[in-house]
Image (cartoon, rainbow, N blue to C red; front, side, top):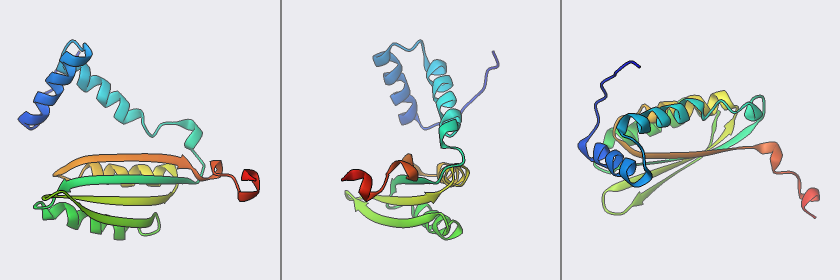
Length: 142
């Protein structure tokens, strides 16, 4: 197996070590391999291909890191055909949250989420994707 070197903040490394101990992993490498497989496979769900999707993306970042907020604004404009709605909120004393509602294809949503993940200084990124055609119609609900 090839050995790679990865840079990360000490606080993240501490969390990985705690997680490994709490969940019975043999070490950091096992966690990083599993996380990498999950990340690479998350948009490979064949049942989502070719369908119109709705995505919800939340991004948490430090208020003092103004470059993140500016990057979110640029992404919103760059993907204006994908972003159906965007909401900004202050969380606590020093954090902000951006919430994006997306409507588009798997490829479009995957590209958008990838660009957010590539943004330096984000603290947390979470998302979900649902096919629009699974919502049904009002007649189906009655």
